[in-house]
Image 1 (cartoon, rainbow, N blue to C red):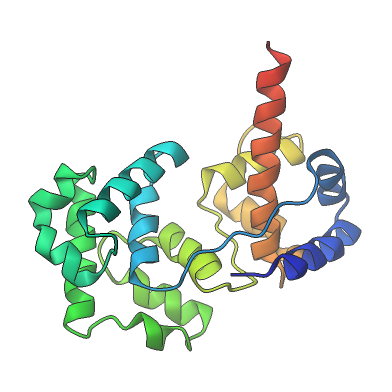
Image 2 (image 1 turned 45 degrees about the vertical axis):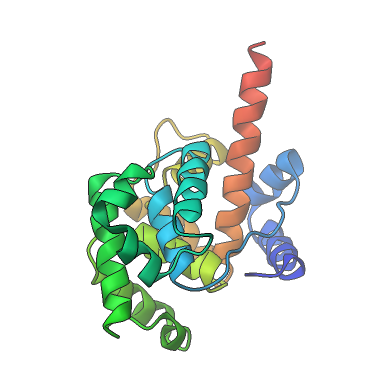
Length: 212
């Protein structure tokens, strides 16, 4: 993962470049580093987390990992099969995506260890060639499974809302507008994204507290 000292160094640079980030850091403070072990299990974990709450994703992952004997591997998922995956919390489509990836790894069509040496665009193109792996999933894997420092997940709803709040916009910015917002933050957009998740969570907690 991106080490915490690097994350904070990057944010120190960005707060000097961008008054909006500087103000948001003053409100929310600096985030902790986040990361996951690279490999097949992390890719499946990210698929589990697609379009569900953090709590729901964690519950499904814990159940799936237990059913897989403590280790989520291509073989353990293939042994569980579609029925076993769905019985342990995965939707039908996600079960099919996971099994497709497991089969690809078993057949040698996807080698995540070799992919570690590829550039960001090649990683994204390779992963999104598989059903169920879109740009968001590839970006999250690049960020947290591979520690890549300049990934900007413009399709993430929380990122969109964080930028809306930080820039006092009436609506979530469109993808092209969000790309423009993030462009000056190169080559530290992963750190910017990690901070924006942290900032959005802080602002939601503050809004909830103010209504009590």
